[in-house]
Amino acid sequence: MRYARFTGQQQISIAQRMRPEPAPGEVLVRVTACCLCGSELRVWRNGWPVTPGHEIGGVVEQPGHALDGQRIVAYIPVWCGRCESCVAGDTHLCDNATQLVGWQRDGGYAEYVVIPEQCALAVPADIPDTLAPLLLDTIGTPAHGIRLARKLVQHGPIAIIGAGPIGLGAVLAAAPLGFPDRYITDPKAHRLHAALALGAQDLDATDAPRRFPLVLETAGVNAARQRALELTAPGGVCVFLGESDRWEIEETKAIRRKDFFIARSFYFPLREYAANIDLLRADRARYAQLVDAAVPLEGLHDLFAAFAAGDRLKPQCVPQRTASEAS
Image (tube, rainbow, N blue to C red; front, side, top):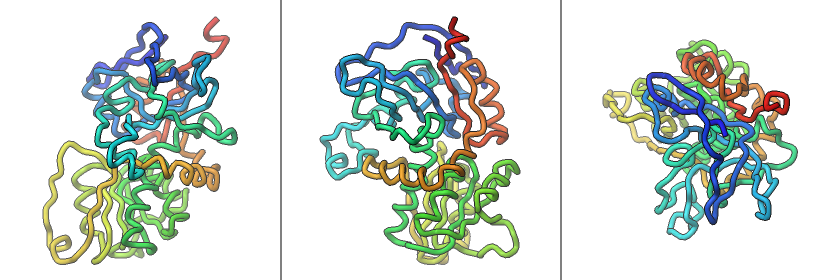
């Protein structure tokens, strides 16, 4: 089968190897679509020892297995189901999880991938292959962050710092979760314009609120975190969704002189999967606007460059050759 090798210095090559064989408790998945994620830009720049790609949609191909023929998306954490967190329903926080699909074990930038069977989440028939991977990071991550914040703040305007895929997903998830007045900022014009077209308002416009009861930081950069903390209203919640290697925050007067809450949200628990499906169904046409490119493995090199430049919203790789290409 063909797969992508991320060799560092923004280089991606396509190689061949034997199709992987599932071990007991695993299933073989034919990848139908794998979305790009901003967290993978460091993989693109630095290289990675396994095949990346963690927003995977596909079809189980394992004759004799109960899941054979099932359309699925791959839940990233390899959760155990036995620890205190899993028993409590927090599968994304599994105490025994040492692997994430596409990070510590091979992911979806390949024609086939093997995943643990407990990570194979069934996709309803009415959700097409192109939209199924959005149920993971794009919907699941920001929606869980908002649900987490709702334990403290139930309504009001929301500020979203960063209009990458997670930020755009937050724009669409916030309204049905109780925050219809959405303000957003991003230095990349294409992404900002996309967010405005989805119903957000420009945070840097003169009529935007000065402080917000809920702020989501989705960029994972220090300037974004700094601004998010300063924009959080007294008694409000600032949720960090973006990833970075280190935090460097200056405790300015705007941060020091108030009581507020900081939350860090990583992914989403399995118990929210059905609700995430409902979010996609209720706003399918606008979620579809996020998937603005689909390329084969050979196009992944150029697609990552366009994604890094901010010229793509939520592009995806479609690894499988068509029948005519394979012949």
